[in-house]
Length: 251
Image 1 (cartoon, rainbow, N blue to C red):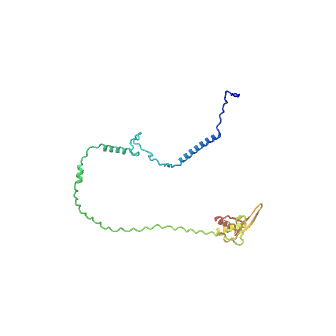
Image 2: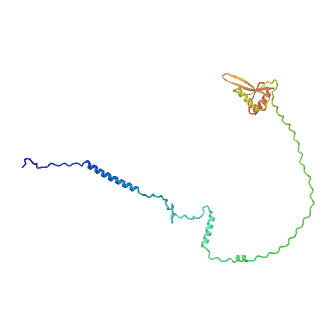
Image 3: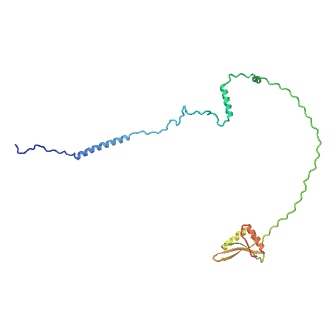
């Protein structure tokens, strides 16, 4: 016999964990199955498909019921604005037509009148010619009535045309037609007034400078050579009548 002691118990064998190779193989199989399923689903979706067609509804929108029901309104066929007298008369005629009065009897008198021959036409007496009236003498002509004499109206003297003022020798009366900011403006104002006012045809403009303290100077537009202030006033009235400005100056 051997001197080695054999124990009466056996050591427990430890379970080995699955290796990584088995896990890789299982994962590959699952991936292949998933890819195959995805390919199959995609091919099924790519097959021929019918396009849906949208058509209108052929059913009517509104259908009138055979028995609408509800409240029955009387006198639906009557006019609203019809007078009551005409409505009652029409109702009476309608009731008589519906009731009837039996078979009609022929109207013999009316038939005899329609079938009777026409009455003979009696001869009319010949017309008697009317007597012509005797000629009457012509009436004497009345003397024509002359209108009463009209008194002659007194002759009205014709108005004497006003004589336009004119410049005279040694005349001292002046008129001022404006005060402007420059000599050129004063000359232009004279040109404008001389075209509008024909009474200024024989006059000459006079432009004088007026110095003012602390202000810009003014240029007075004047014309003169008139005999007296009355002539200056008459000339100003003529200028003002044409829309211009004018003031008599001196005398």
